Length: 234
Image 1 (cartoon, rainbow, N blue to C red):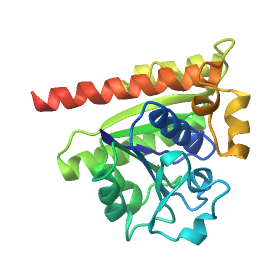
Image 2: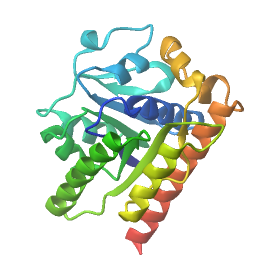
Image 3: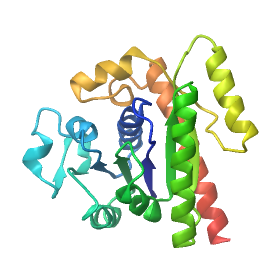
Image 4: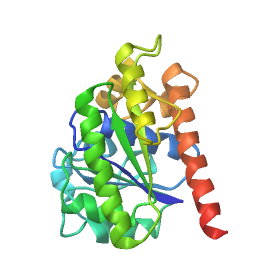
């Protein structure tokens, strides 16, 4: 399939939560999934290894994690390209969690990515972070002369009603011509609870509201990548 990066220069937007839930849903669908954790906090690695080991114990070598997900933890500028390409050769999908800043590792990962997902909470600060991240995507496109899909993902939005801030955030991107996913990553207690168990709604309760939300979001991502691959082949 593809290499997908989750990235934003604004912290707290739900970047890692988005990544691990996409990983879980892709595993539920039967895909071979690998995670590359290039964020110093190593939260994605902790989820993949939950109850097995600590990220620092496995170093940066490729490890086998829970749910049949392969993992490269503690990845940095010096080995991010090698780890992504190694895993891409043996996986259907490689999901890369990047540090919350514009840096060399981000640019290198974007250079080999097929898609970049930029999570944004409804706030002006998150909009600024997304714009900065999109500049890095453009720089990677210019350097590699590759088409790299980029989509903003609205995160932590209310499942009950559209708030004024959410409407204004979406409108700001639409006016700027920035493409957004139609499906939003909603605020659900189940996503927080899963961080304590190392599981995910997709695996424990796929028919729950949280499970259905991730399934719809992942379905849109997969459809966009399939359409992009088809356009490239043509």
